[in-house]
Amino acid sequence: MRVLVVEDEAQLAQQLQSALQGAGFAVDLADNGVDAEHLGSVEPYAAIVLDIGLPRRDGLAVLAAWRRQGMDRPVLLLTARASWQEKVRGIDAGADDYLAKPFQMEELVSRLRALIRRSAGLASAVLRQGPVALDTRACALTVDGQRVPLTGHEYRVLAFLMHHAGRTVERMELAEHVYSQDSDRDSNTLDVFVARLRRKLPPDFIVTVRGLGWRIDGAAA
Ligand code: CA
Image (cartoon, rainbow, N blue to C red):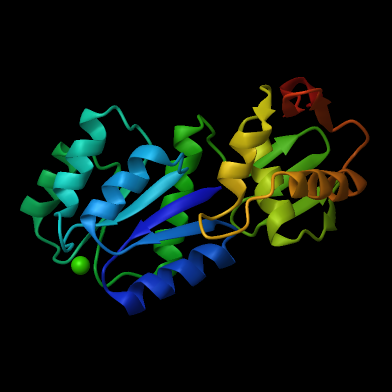
């Protein structure tokens, strides 16, 4: 899962990036409203963390512009004050959730996960397909109740496929969600991650759809 963090305070942006990377996300950063609006319009983020007070364009104006364009990804707003007027304006502009600064990183990560789950129509933080369970809180995979270690890239590939179980995920789509913008997005390395994942999963759990991509069958449960 790839997320965008829009925050102009460099130190907070770094803290957010490392907390979210630690939670298994690929993270892009923007430090002003104009870059943020562009990235959020063209990149398929699973969710966006958006500060309201931003240089060049206010966060609420950015959010309103995204919603006008039909951008429907979940957005968590960061507000400087716990003022109810600001929260109301944020929700009216199309925010899905908000946190007032200062906040605990753990709370932000957990709320962001909940937003992503809800937007995928999933109720539980543990994604299950048959003997396979992926706990998105701990980035932990178990197969038949046995813990199986995953690398960060393996986790992101498996989490995206399991969030979209039952449909084919195309190669480019997967690449866009697994790699952050500044990384080398060689989609051939996806084959390497999928091959490594297959050695850790039951046979045929990840189905190759020739010429397109991969699928985890919802019916595998
Ligand atoms: Ca700010």
